[in-house]
Image 1 (cartoon, rainbow, N blue to C red):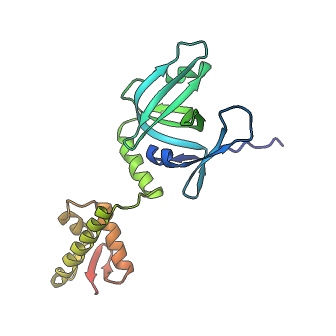
Image 2 (image 1 turned 45 degrees about the vertical axis):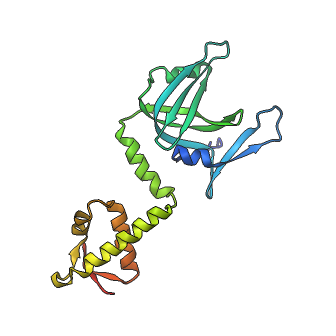
Image 3 (image 1 turned 90 degrees about the vertical axis):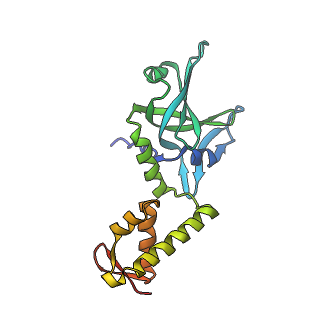
Length: 213
């Protein structure tokens, strides 16, 4: 039975995190451009990526050695995707401003990290936001000191609101979200869940919370 080829996992990443990752190179080979083995990001070893970004620049070489590149920007950073020889036709229909999904291998040249695509597809720009929310769950960014203060203030507001609702035998989570309309719903839900786990509030019935203290 022929051996099955195992393709590397294509990790969904922010470009910013990709550029901050640690490059692990194979320096044992010949030449001045060591081969990239993978990049390290947290506990993950990554060689293949899945990026959603906007095309902000496109270049095609007119020299004998045919190659082309596009510059991608997802709002967090920029990285280039490169193709060589006949493969450059994959960039043919792309123009500045297109939103695309790119799946490909990571490579380096002259210390620059780039993507060698094996799939490129135009998509609706709304998927940039969807991908951003998706990545936040997998690779959450540490909160800044200012954001930590905002979360603490939000927690205090939620507790106070639940306390004040005791005469009505509690308050619905949806009502809390509606009243705190200037705060992110995901953060509100996150803080409510923490308060439930800490035993400060309880849920007498699904979706409604009361103060326990």
